[in-house]
Length: 369
Image (cartoon, rainbow, N blue to C red):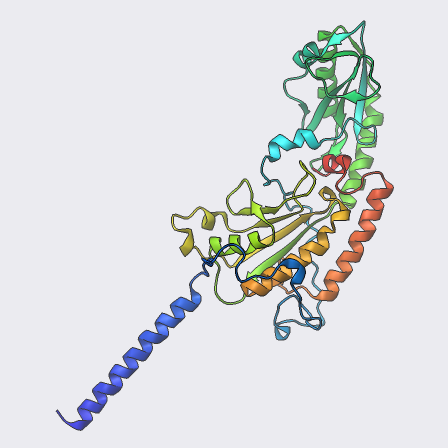
């Protein structure tokens, strides 16, 4: 074998080895990132210690990718589903609902001939406590008490009232729903030998439309999208990084929530990623390239500073997961844009406070649901 042949063979081997090494490196580089095995708090500083660059124009984005002349808003998205994935959401809904209030309810007093037992009231309560899409509630005035309460079997009541909500995120109470409420309320009262007094339908429907118009104009559901800049993420990697910032698994696969400090209250923030990736036979091989961080503004008390926490968490996740925070169109969110949104939210909070529908209150949670 000549020296030339040997040299060509060696060169070919080196090229083949280089190609194999390059392909191996490429596969490893593009493989979904996996969670670390050193415990849930390894590798990520606490949120309070997270410091973003003060001169960065966007949250962990390449300034060369941003057109400075463009302004891109995060989502004030009326179609974004409200966070409902916190543990026990269905069970907690009734407990966090406020009592009937003339501000957002049609209330029909029920005059009674005498005291009635709570057991009888519960037995007479409509089996389906809705009129169309609007919830119906019953309250009683316990003998010797001065406050209305949901009926309990062991109590005795000297007065009752039944009400239906004027509006929620499905729209205003309409004539058909009001008529359905009247039928159910009348049957409830008849079962207890009571006499209900109904407000004028047209007046209440008009009031419902006015409330719905206000609610529609002052509803806000924000969403940031965190997109992977290079390597994709595995579900375990996303869950590990989110857990370090206080998130816990939600009721649905691919959903996590930041719990509220108020027991029974909706979560402060929601985090959603691909459900199919979370349900895959081998989640470690599932590739996630984006996740959504959401805030249902009227559902969370402003004292918790949810928007500020949302920004901090988005920045921390972007920094640690090598991602970029964008709007729904994929445009990186600039710091000045987020500052402007924060100012708009303060005005929104003030307006809700002025209508006695403060964000996070029982009435606001019912109206914006």
